[in-house]
Length: 372
Image 1 (cartoon, helix red, strand yellow):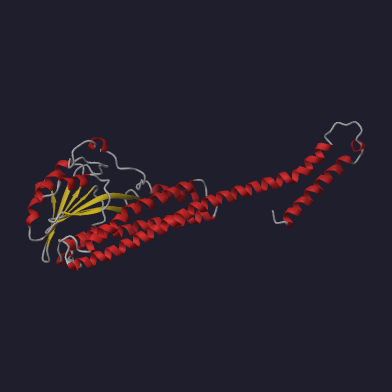
Image 2: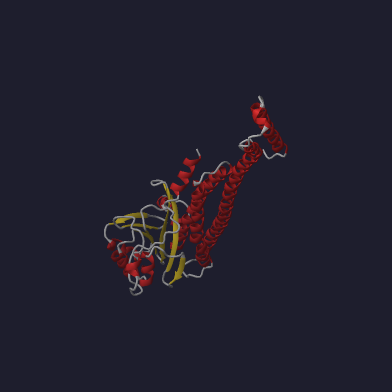
């Protein structure tokens, strides 16, 4: 029962390869001038897809763009437009979007470089934000992580992600069904809703890690096999990666909730404060998880040490019992001619009686001392 649980923990951690540096394409990027678009990371979709949701309080239109030019007219619309780009390997397409929406070349470079640290940059006419999105894939049964980049404009929000799966479906449904405040507010509130969905996704991942932590604690309380150490290291790696993904997010949201970018209105800053509180809660939970995992590592080493001590204790007791028996056997194993006991009729059974009595007395003594 224990090994299947450990196998499940290790299998679910494959998608979150903590020490893997996203370096695919880095060699090609080396030496190029700043702003050169070179995709660095894993290609997760075959073709880039672009979806557009354009809405206001009275209407909502959705569109899948076959050509990149199909999303250009929404830049200057009087409604709120959300353009979501899935796939970052087509740098030519990303470059066309950036040229039309007036994005800085360094921003485009950061978008296609999927190893960025969470950050926020204010360019006056738009705000550039990079986050790490974590979600549990029901298809592969693994924890997935990818970079999501946002461009907040006055009438539009651009989002760039690597794969088709994401955590934004609840936001899409709220827009379609006109639930909540989304259709009544502008692009800053849409950005808040998307970021809030990402932060809420962290709680789901923390719940998964909590379940694995509880399972490992139960195993440690019994007889942990060697695979337990791998599971603990894997869990610790997940906690480290979560901390690296969430800790910079605190500064990003802190800048948004303070209203520094002019595109964030005062009423929406209150909602960003709520996301900030959630982020702090996530960070506190991650720190607690790290402490628990560190304690589990010590528990495992203690369990292994105690098990070794028990084994050595049993072997020592056995060796101690056989020391006097070996002494008697050594004496009567000597080949002296004049040993009177050798010619006695009852010498053999008497010797066995003495050996058994000595062994029994020593066992009783060990039990009295509670060594057995």
